[in-house]
Image 1: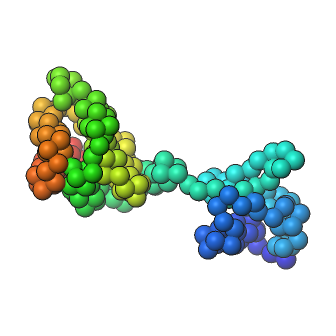
Image 2: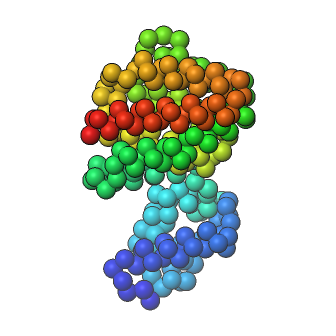
Image 3: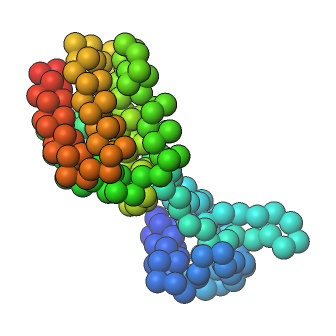
Length: 228
């Protein structure tokens, strides 16, 4: 019998490993609570806490009714991104990572992402990009709209892993510097850069798009650094 005070964590870890190694495939139903209690020699409260832990990780979901039970699910891009965003923001607020760290990762991910977006974009992607940042066709400027433009570029690359890694960085950066600070004194420069990036994506010019993104991120990195 598991005697540890964190017995539920031990059970959760064992079930998590079985989910990840395919023992319990996506969509399959886990053994009943009674079967889990017998397998791990623990009480009902331990099983309940273990399943609650896995549910918070979006690995399982509970279904009520005659055909109900606990089923293995697949985390979505949104779920994974939200978890990463929380972690990155907490690290940044504790000064474990800096704006330079965040911007370095943006360079690593967004420069190739915009290249892929230029070559893979659809007409629907262009429409989303066009509508994402009002500054493309007016003087309106905000960190939120600028961030949305970058998110749409990443989505236009059509690689969900890029979305998981990149999009939380935008939100974490906004949480750190604040919408007002991030938008002030830089709006016109960002809008000009975004217009050129949009044109390169429209033209399917991947090399131009990557060069523009590299210079754009260098510019905003200098600005964000001045806010620290």
